[in-house]
Length: 148
Image 1: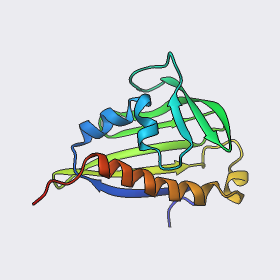
Image 2: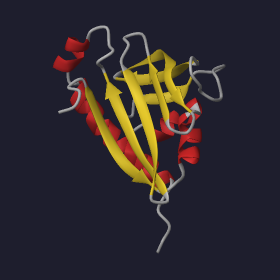
Image 3: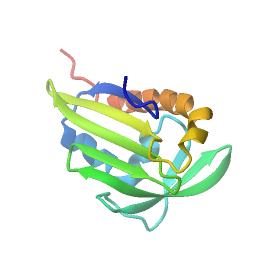
């Protein structure tokens, strides 16, 4: 049945996990991937590469502009990265080698949030599921399959 406080999407991407992980661990590239339209830019002075415990800020916009500070809370080189912000929910990326490329799963997990019921009752799970699908489409477009 799965966790009711998570939404995710999975897509095959025609690139090795190492190339995708390099993109995911560079906060300056997050606006290129973001399918929600809310991630605007990495905050100046932040890290160039994410690893476990790294804190990084992003300029965001959902109606009005705002700033968010994230912390990397899960990390396995070339396989897994997840970050959370003050409310505790997580954005997780899992990479699994598959058939000459990578199976990429992005998850919005609010089971660790401070107010998970509030998120469950909001529009965020549905909107984030839609944004995950668009994000995975963008990622797959960055690494198109070779013509056969």
